[in-house]
Length: 604
Image (cartoon, rainbow, N blue to C red; front, side, top):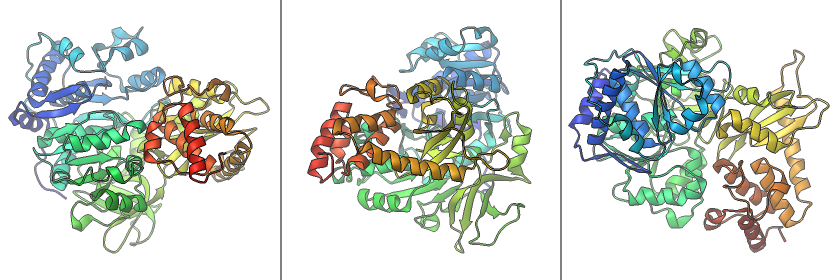
């Protein structure tokens, strides 16, 4: 355990003020934020907040698409000792409203488009500050003429720095409370373990409403006097641009989820020298299980080390590190704990012998305070100073840990946690759906995909595109199931509970039968059927001209699944340049007709 002093909000502000004002803190999609600009804006935001009666201990909701505004406001609230409730700006109106009610804030700092949708009749309940989603202009207009405020000289290290919700569509969202002490304990570990400093140029494109983007991006960069690179948003069709940007912007580190590493491998040999530079140090893989085969192939192909880390929102970010030092590195593991204690326990909470599977428990200064206003939920996971993660693990004789499964019910898809009950709660509100059960299916690129079984009784199943449209009115796109399977009733045990093992078996059989049935049509019909399945729409709504701009369900995740399904359906492998060239159904059809024949597939 570390015995070093834990810096606080004041120390962070002083560190930022000492950094060269002209140095770039964040290179964003819509411009750059310098250290001087961040410090000046944070001071004027402090003045604005004080004038509006906001002070330490109060909660303020933050939701904006603009990275520069998000970072500036978050750092300002941190310095003022005001708790930031960070919400997903892509959430649907009902989901945002649920989380705002749960947070019980004093103020909202949100994009104008969100305020207009979520709060037309509730504006009087909060102090409301409107932002824009494409640059700092709206923020600068908001603080124009404001005198700099004097934030508190001391911020209580046990007070809550921020709250991140790990679920949101249920009636009881879980908000993780992270104290200032826990946040800065994690930052001290990051800086020391990774060797971050003023010369660090950290490429991290993960969302700022997730801890991996926020703490392992904005906050650690500010603590280290480093530059955070966020020149674009992660999209499948921009993978080549992301790799190019790493090289052109002279990134020293890349923070990524395993699915991004898998997509980078698809680019082929021509891009594998992009990270072989004098300045690039290593990749940090976070948020999801990293397949050892992918791990080794990536290191061999790109010629750089991948540091595999493990943590949860409840532990700020990371707890174990597999690298970059030799003492913690062993491919296929999550490494060893740094500045924390781990133990593996049985159902009674007692430690088990090395090599024995059990639940992973964590103790350290970076562990959450608890779940916001949820003492019963907190008591379930925080016991005698140990946080019980719900992950099943083993530890070998050399002290290396491996995650072998999950005790808790969560699907991790592309590094995003999706809770089945959140999905089920929304699906049960769809007209014609009697009940729902959601499971995660293994997937090479995404780790898992979300699949739902739907009970419809004796009725006719609703069209999938109607279910998807209803779902997206109430929940974020990443939670949308990639497959729906309809049943008169779901398989149940004697007590009426859904038997997920049996549901999984039946869905596996249906998937196999569906692939066989799809093979029966002509090439164009089969492409349209594959697309309709991936994008949750009817085949008669698709045409050769259909693109992501005209099909609501054509998200980045669905795009990858569409391409993978085409490869499976027509028994051929796409080349990297083909993958990046597909923009429409017509492009995919042309590729299938050309590529499957050339690669010995069965399309023609």
